[in-house]
Amino acid sequence: MRTQRQRWNAAWKAVANLGAYTQLNRMDCCRTCAACDMEGNYKPGTPVVWTYGGQGNYLAFARDTGMARNDYQYIYHENGGAHLIVTALRNEGFDVEWDGDDTRAVLCRFV
Ligand SMILES: [Zn+2]
Image 1 (cartoon, helix red, strand yellow):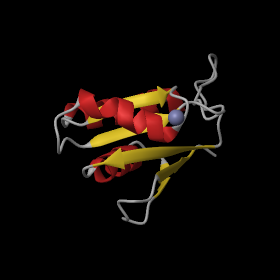
Image 2 (tube, rainbow, N blue to C red):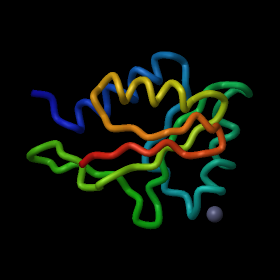
Image 3 (cartoon, helix red, strand yellow):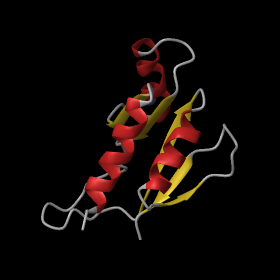
Image 4 (cartoon, rainbow, N blue to C red):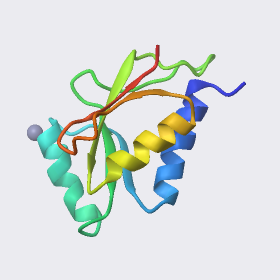
C-alpha cells in the first residue's frame, strides 16, 4: 500500500508534468513575500501551485509510516493551478476542499 507521502508526491509530480510551476514548503518570512519571490521563476500565465512552510506550516511526513504529521495543508495557486492540484490530489484519494473560487486556498486533509 502506498503511503500518504508517496501519494502526495505523486500528485505534485503529476501537476508539474502538466507544466505547472510547483513549490513545496516555501520558507519565506510570509506568504506575501513567498508569492513575490516566486514571480520571476515562471512565465506569465503559467499555472502555479505551492505550499507555505514557514510560521509552523511546514508539512512533514513520518519517516517510518509516511503519514503526514499535519492534519491538513493549505495549497495556494495562480493561473488555474488550483484545478490541476485538486484533480491530482483527488486522483490520489485525498480529501480535498475547494469551492472553485480562484481567490481561495485549496485545503487538503490528511485525517
Ligand atoms: Zn514577508
